Amino acid sequence: MTDRHVIVGAGPVGRHVAALLAERGSEVVVVTRSGRETGIPGVTGVRADAGDAEALSRVADGASVLYNCANPGDYTQWETSWPPLAAALLEASRRSGAVYAITGNLYPYGPVDGPMAEELPDAATDHKGRLRARMWAEARAEHEAGRMRAVEVRGSDYVGPGVGQNGHITRQLPTARAGKRARVFGDPDLPHSFTDVLDVARVLVAAAEDPSAHGRVWHVPTNAPRSQRQTLTDVLAAGGLPAVPVSSIPVPLTKLGSVFSPMLRELGELSYQWSRPYVLDDSASRAHFGLEPTPWDEVCRRTIAEYRVPQPV
Image (cartoon, rainbow, N blue to C red):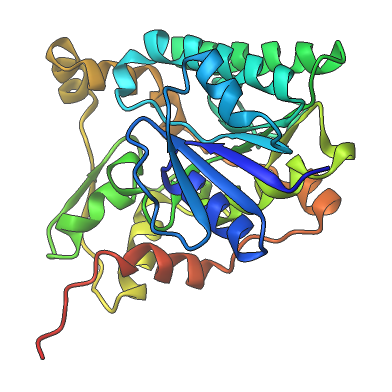
């Protein structure tokens, strides 16, 4: 097997995967529309449309693993942007023989009544969850038919460097560090799992390179659940900052806003994630891969680091 790795997407997960692989000396290529270099030593940036199966197959030729770390830019347009991208990734994996390692999420499970384990059925009720469930079902079917090797890794809401506006906690940090009130979806005191992007990358690499892990979903080892209020307080404290008041965005206000805002409509379909405990069961992956989550205090330090106010000199 070659040690050439092709990563589609230069978001926080893709960058962490690239850094892990480059640090050990692997050949690493990151595919984006711009082709901009990542700035990570030993990583090559390539410009290509990952939704073009021919172009992506050329880049993936000779690769040992093709990582789907893509995050289509417009959250409200997944139904348009994901299908051609997913189809191209499948085709490139089939042609190249590369293991197809997918960065998934918990949307496919839909509303749940207890901790989420990999044995749960994909029973999403919203269109985003059904789309992500369909993507995995198609990849698994190809795997089971022997046409490719596939594995999917799922984490909960991200914390860590680079998450920014895509994270429920990190989007609060620019104002919270100034002492201003944070306003969150749902009940701010319900237990909720938050997954570090570095741990997503670690498990994605481990699962891709372990043939016994292929053909199924794995959950990322994740620290014990904490409420949104406690998580934000912990992250601020890691930067030497005081806690801020945390309030829930009123449901009527969210419903009213969704009339005018496509983004609020999308988030409204996922409101079940914030109206009951949302807890990840990671016991299977801990046992299989022998991995533990990054210690919580370190996760918090890494998360707040890019939001620290520069000290005067």
